[in-house]
Length: 239
Image (tube, rainbow, N blue to C red; front, side, top):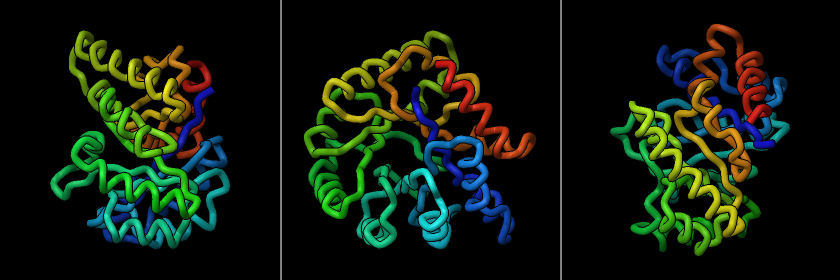
C-alpha cells in the first residue's frame, strides 16, 4: 500500500496571512501523524511566504515518522538542509511569481547543478527526491544523477478540465511511474491531488507515496486535521 506524506505548508499560509503565531504547523503535523500520516512535508521557500526556518527546526525535533524538506537547489537551502538534516530532501523549482509550484524541475537544463546538489546531500546521509514532470527524458536524468526517488508532478492531470484531458495526462503519469520503477527509483506522486482525484490511481502499484497538502488542510478547517488525514488514508488504502 502506498504511503501518505502530509504537507502542512498551508497551515503556515493561514498563520502568515494574519501575521499571527497561530495556527501552528507543528501542531498540525502532530495531529497528522496521530491520524496515520507516514511523513510530514514542508517547503521552505526563499521568500518565506509560509513555512519559516523555525518551523523546520521544531519539526525535526518532533516528527516521529519522517520529515521531508522541499527546497530549491540554492546554496542557502543546501546549507539549511545540511544543518537540520531532514530524513529526505525533495528538490523543486521555485519562482517568486508563482502561487504554488507550477511544474517539475528541468533536469535537462540544470543537470550539472542538480547533480552536485544531489551528491552533497547524499554524502551527508540525506535521501534525495526530485520533483519532475512525467517525462521519460527527465526520469532518465534523475536516474543518471543518482537520485533516490522521483516525485511525479500530478498537477496537469488534476487541473485538466475535460475527461479526455485528464485521461491524456494520467497516461503520462502511468508511463512515468512504470519507467521510474524499472530504473529502480522510488516513485512518489504529488501536487493538486484531492479526495476525488486520488481515486484515479487505483491499481497503479508503482506509486510508493502520495504527497498531499492543500486538499487535506482545506478539509481540516471543517473536520479537523486528524479526520481529514484519516479520510485520505482510507482512500489510499482502497487503491
